Amino acid sequence: MRTLRDIPALREALDAVRRRDQRIALVPTMGNLHDGHLALVESARRHADVVVTTIFVNPMQFGAGEDLAAYPRTLEMDQAQLEAAGCDLLFAPDTAALYPRGLASQTQVRVPGVSEGLCGGSRPGHFDGVATVVSILFNLVQPHLACFGEKDYQQLAVIRKLVADLHFPIEVVGVPIVRAEDGLALSSRNGYLSAAERQAAPMLYRTLCRARDALEAGEAPEPVLAEAGEALRAAGFAPDYLELRATDLGPVTAATRDAVLLAAARLGPARLIDNLTLTLPS
Image (cartoon, rainbow, N blue to C red; front, side, top):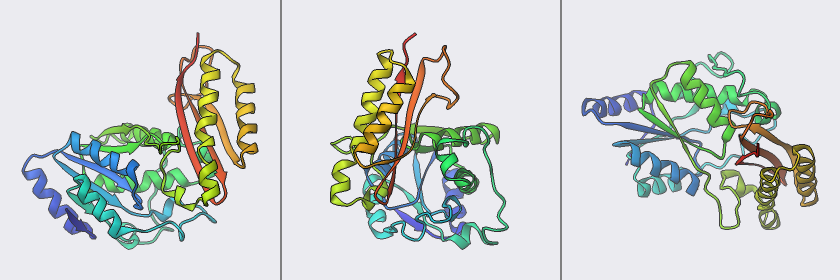
């Protein structure tokens, strides 16, 4: 596996790949990799000849008071994991490489609609930062496909709309959530949890499962969601949101059958997110 830090070297390497008429898959990450990220690489490996992973802690998607400075940077460990997973090329630029004129004057990409509410409501500007950096990486790598995790359900919806609206010739592949044995969705931010918080953290998944089962059984959403919120608070969580949406993130109506239950909650210093899809009864 090659590790590249600057744009000209990346373009030169990928020009050679394109001359060989090989399919390119992109896996964008912020590093501090875990098995969820490696599942993205493995999915990319199945779909393409050459897998490009990027590691870039994107300052544009962090708001004031968020954990940009504390976000773990583990490049050497990440390199070893990526090589073992079959990644061909790692692009790990610094901020100056992607934003040479600084953040204040950087052109930004905004995806209306799906970026609003949920994480977009509690983290203003977050998805503008995500859409901007992903657009830059799409332009630099020009992949045939890109893999994103379904744990970040709203982010995946933003990327899909971005690709459709801007006519990127890129297939977006959603990769299922990877969970620990106790159900906790894997996340780099799980490392912020203390031992006691880590023991409590799976309650988020279990609460969503109970709510899903109740909703699929025909119980009314409002009391189900209220009870779930109370269960999370009793377990020590500070819920950010707990919402039922249609799978396109639109509102649930009487005609909605395919839906998604989405939650974000703080537990100690960590903000955890999770989601479950479900089928509502007619």
